[in-house]
Image 1 (cartoon, rainbow, N blue to C red):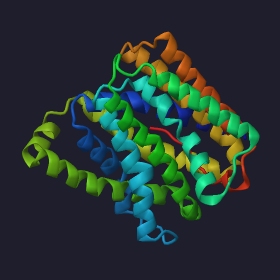
Image 2: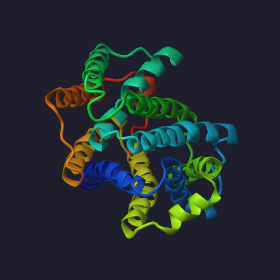
Image 3: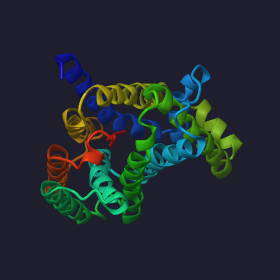
Image 4: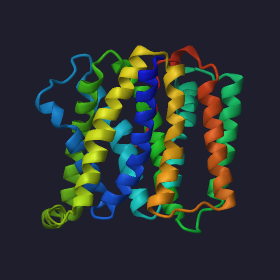
Length: 297
């Protein structure tokens, strides 16, 4: 990779890490379903100028959107709104790599390599260590809801495979639109029109800027840049940069929200990241080499 591309990869990882903090700031002022709807509504603005990708059918577009975007980010938002620490959230979401490889093995027979199996085991141990801290500053319910996020993310990764030929920016804009519409409907159904309007009309400058960051920069621009990197370079060169996301998210959360990590939780977080590093840096099955899109926030 050229130095400029390395810089872009690092920048995207930093953006995704900071997006966890921005999401929490927005959630301090908005219900999770409305905040997530606004996030994707902002990211879907390019649909006004870009047609739906011809390479992707409506059923596939909706399926990808409901897993990769709606399911993943709504679960994150609800979990954070129910007290899930932001730094810890940024680590657990990255366990999507574990689930992606596992689902690929179950559904497509893409058996992981020996080193990937070791990485899965290590990451699994780390998640169990984190489970040991449940009940101290977050509930079992919040943790269970958050685990929907990496699972949805992993399913979306696999559904995204048939759409790899579509223009990335165009594809992600329409994925955001497919997520935004039902989320706005859900917000009106569960909250009511008046509470939605009151929440929007009382947004502070911090809330507005946080929404613009997660919608326009983190979701729209960062995903487009990441997709371009995956298009131009082998996934093995690009994907490891995603390991920076939980470090940035945890560091930013400790600064902004004074989040602290006890010995067991910190050890679990490091173990999860270590296991993911083994999975991402080891030789992957051919079917996963350039097909898996990792994330972030």
